[in-house]
Image 1 (spheres, rainbow, N blue to C red):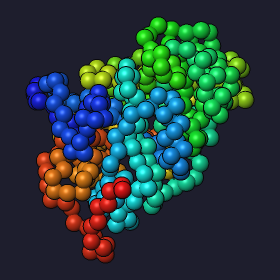
Image 2: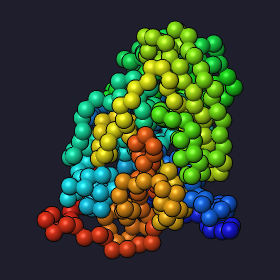
Image 3: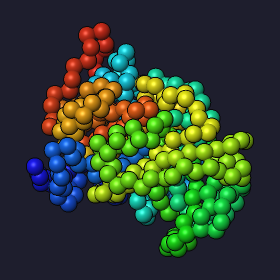
Length: 373
């Protein structure tokens, strides 16, 4: 069965400028073809989330990397249904201190970061200590001049795990953001135009790194979402120097795969199964409020259709769909979180028929939606 629909995104298409954004935007995109009854229509990576202890400090860090634009004005409080969508089942409402979707003007692909500082509830435990921890582990930024960017960021106080590793055009280095989140800088072998006025030579975000316990299980799982372009990474034994660039003091081996969608922004994820050293500690449990990198948001045309399809394939979900995000009856989109085999939260964002705001529990005070000053 092949169905054609006019695709409209709740939130915003990843390529829309911040000044064109509205809280309840409906953005027209090219028609999409559902290739089968199990095709959820995954179109793009909207953003991934970073939960910070100090919004202003972390915002400035990403501004230096090139995330100079952004979308703000989101409600600081929201409905109980929205709290449930984040696994905060015992909360009447959550409360944010600050939040912004960070954007990278002129980037060659989707680069959004949902930077949030939670007021309540917030889990301030440190992020993953090493980049081989199960779960969503790091974001990769592509640069045309790794050495220049390394020197610039080091002079700004950047924390790096090592010196740059590799040959020109094929180098990489890991750094930490102010909250301890791993960022991988990777050098492109292909020359690209670059804004000469920019502080760095960063030009995009080629992939998000996710560590898995069983690469075959994870490949099959992500294929259900539409990651059907698979490029396997054969088992790699790292040299002592390369292992040190990953932050390891001993031997290191992994295998994996790059998985990508074949429509929309064609984004990819890098799935790695670490054979040595292997850390069996699971990914962050719910609620989705842990300090660090957390939650990958993916856009689909119809969130209810996507959930129905995935549930038939035994994909687990954290909660039911929540209308998002104004807290009013006019919301035209919804969110829900699927959970991958290692506990990574995949937020599906898509169209949802407007409906009344779900009632607050009887034990809760009246709903109050507060916005930033």
